[in-house]
Length: 601
Image (tube, rainbow, N blue to C red; front, side):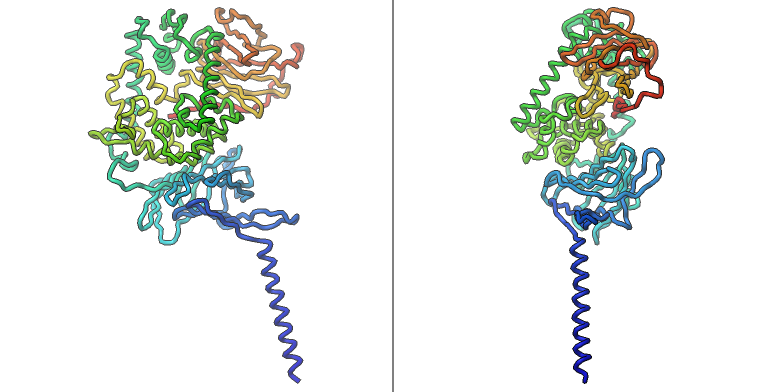
């Protein structure tokens, strides 16, 4: 009589077991954890399916690296601050991509991206996180926590120490307070590096030196400038001692001191009309057509050097002055893209010259918001190593000694110090800036020992906030073309109307004249200066007014700009626009981009 109920209970138990197992199977089938290790870095995401059965990511991310974990989930979301209203907003994880075996990037719902880059695939690797924030996003924050048994102590608002039983690390970013990492437009990087405990010179020891002082650094920079002016004025009448580099440094310093016109008048005509000039001094003087020939030759030579470097897998090209300018002028070039990917494939240690050049190029690309910076990011830690290894303590000063035991030139030493200062500002790590101050102050402590030529070569390496010094400015770039200028203007702003009329707003002191070589300018129908139509005239440089010529073979607008006001507007009308068209109203122009002269220090 009991057989039937027992069988029924067994049947129901079996049925419930099947149902429960089915639920588990369905759950695990629709949601799965994907984990992968890239050397010492491991990341995990949760994958699921949408209604169309396409694989999507849940808002759940964990990235672990040498004792620290970066986490994003429902309880610990990634948070952004918008530029326009400063209000915080949660964002979600959308996708990820592996650019290389040492680089994985995570994309979020606002369009921002976080790239995790390791220096190598060994257990001793260093980590760099680079944020590419969406256009209207000012800041992005994520949470972190240490592994069990690992201690974290706050060094300052920008840095924390992470300590295990045997190792000590420093993590630095724009902000590291309250277990939250913050990335910003001005500081888009986080570095996570092991702190060395060796007995020689190390980065953390720089602050103990009296010469690692910013005020002393600024004092030495002022002394460098005044010494150049004094030495130049003492030798200006000796044509054999006058170099283009010394003329440029002198005019730039005087211009920053409010004496630009005086400096221009002080330069001898023998130099202005002589054969020592190249495109470098073109923004100060005339003969733009001849100077543009030398600029074109320099650009073509740089292209050949880059092509040869790519073919031979050679990194020495990174020691080329202003390499980043060329990269930004030709962002879609195949050779350019190949060049910036070469350093991450190198197995040999970088030389000091290569290391300094790579970091310098990386910093300039970061400041230009160029995506070309990202392939260089994984090797920056490896580039810093030969720099720190070259530092040798010598009677409370620092000397830089290469691997052959030879002290490097003062020029390279100052460039090295300047690179550390600027890198320290980007990653918000005072140890790098202090080390940079220490190096520069060590080599500039007795500036009078250098001749005018050396001083003039030093100046642009350590003074990067003087717009009077001739420089390249990227004015506008799109998918097909880049407009850039060789100039000494404070800034050139670009806007374009719906009718395709381009407006260039040039910022330079009223009452002063300067010259511009603007490349990448497509053929136009007419041009307006001072709100009046101007005609091309090969004698334009001899008139007491602004003027221009256009070289179609190089798409170069050669412009003399005599400023009646601080901002002078140059308007270029496209070939399809007829002269009888009405002038655009103030409501028509549509601002595309304004790239200001980067202030580096």
